[in-house]
Image (cartoon, rainbow, N blue to C red; front, side, top):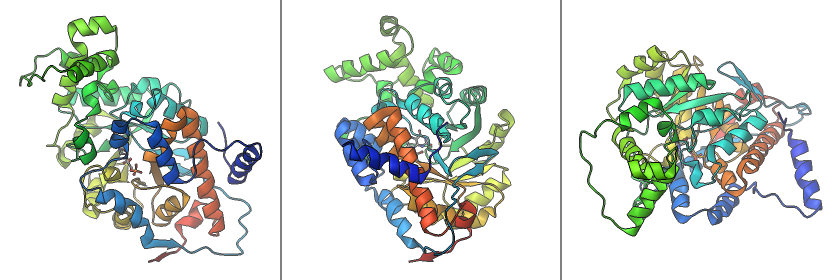
Length: 421
Ligand SMILES: Cc1cc2nc3c(=O)[nH]c(=O)nc-3n(C[C@H](O)[C@H](O)[C@H](O)COP(=O)(O)O)c2cc1C
């Protein structure tokens, strides 16, 4: 496993620069997004970069950080710096992990597999998405011993939920991240305007099509017959794409209609808007892995999570993709940290774009920070190498921000004072 230190990372970049080689992955997050955009199809860019409604939550996720300022402290001997930490029994090289992101094949054909390999090369945990482009077993296989978690969307089929939990454990996942904020898809204006949903083309449903329970559900007749789409050239193209993505032989799948049936079955069962707190014991009964609730933004929900015995709380507004006009994750953090009273770890994502953002979250009491869209952009630009470069940059940035602020390790960040603006 490669160990990153900030000074070596800078040296490596500048020495290559002296030979005329510029980094493929821009360190500037705005340039990174802009460069990735040029690489992606417009619909892929819309799906990844877009958010709900007028995208006010996305704006808040960035501007929220301005409420706090770091106050650098001087003359504190920061020659030895250590950004390692622990999370749910794992020792990590940095307080960072890769958040679950579905349909990564829109960014790069190697999708989750490339991300997992990059994460594994640096020991950074990866949360496999329920909407991944490759089955969890394939992504787990390229991660070595690096910690991995499985993110669950609670489906209409409890049997499928149990099957996902069992598969996650069998492929070495050491926690289940239950995403609570996506009981339905948010109103994502950019996708609506393209009238495009990747799942309909068979993208992002590999966890389902590789699942024995899902395969059985596929063979049961649909209780509510679905409307037949108009037969247009685009409809035929969609059919071919869904068929090509379905496991097995293309021609057999075309003959049996398996690709289309998989998409229809997925649409029928993927979301369960009626889940409540009372459903959580079901998960506890069917897995002994730590349970992490993703999407918590209110202190009362955090308290309730403790009452239900969850193992970690994950503050997130899904990168502004679900509720427009919502509270930013960083602004929600202090209330959640207060409610949790250090009983369980507090994870966070949504809007993080570099070391200073991570520093502020740690100073406000977060245990670890999830990287979201930036790693999709790095994936789009340079596959596995791009994601590894991005992770190395984030670690270097955090280590330097920490040292220059006068802190030697995360303990010192956690006890340092931020100025409120
Ligand atoms: C394209 C895309 C797909 C996502 N898919 C999932 C998913 O399958 N499951 C999930 O829990 N969160 C998903 N998320 C949300 C991320 O886990 C994370 O909360 C979000 O990206 C953080 O915001 P940021 O990208 O602005 O940092 C997705 C986000 C994006 C951008």
